[in-house]
Image (cartoon, rainbow, N blue to C red; front, side, top):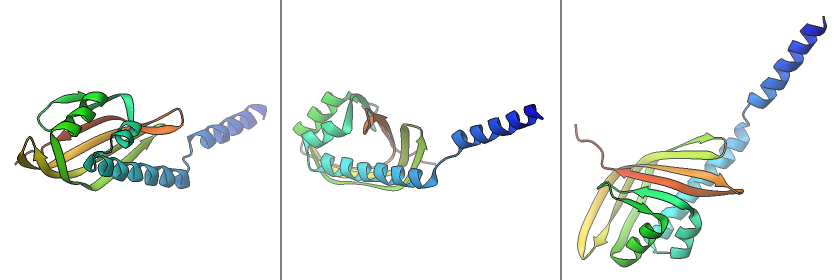
Length: 148
């Protein structure tokens, strides 16, 4: 009889730790979506301090052409030769795992770089991590969708 009680207790205990809190997940997902909006607004409006605050110090960003930037490199590139007129995401999906959020979706950006107009319609993957109680972008990857 004691072993049956112990098994029952262990089952309840494990169920408690394995259970997810749907309300908490919805709140976290809403926070991540808000950060995505904040990110795009700061990027478009060239708000250096806001961009820097959203990114982890070791953040890595990969653009459509395969160029990879660090946090400092990305910010300095965008403040020098880039004017962004449109930066918008759609069909975003947020997947949560403990202190990591993976965001995937479609991304549209247009503007002018080095005096030449550009217009990208990409697939985007961004990874946010909760570091010291604060969500920060740790990686971003934009890729041109394949043409079938």
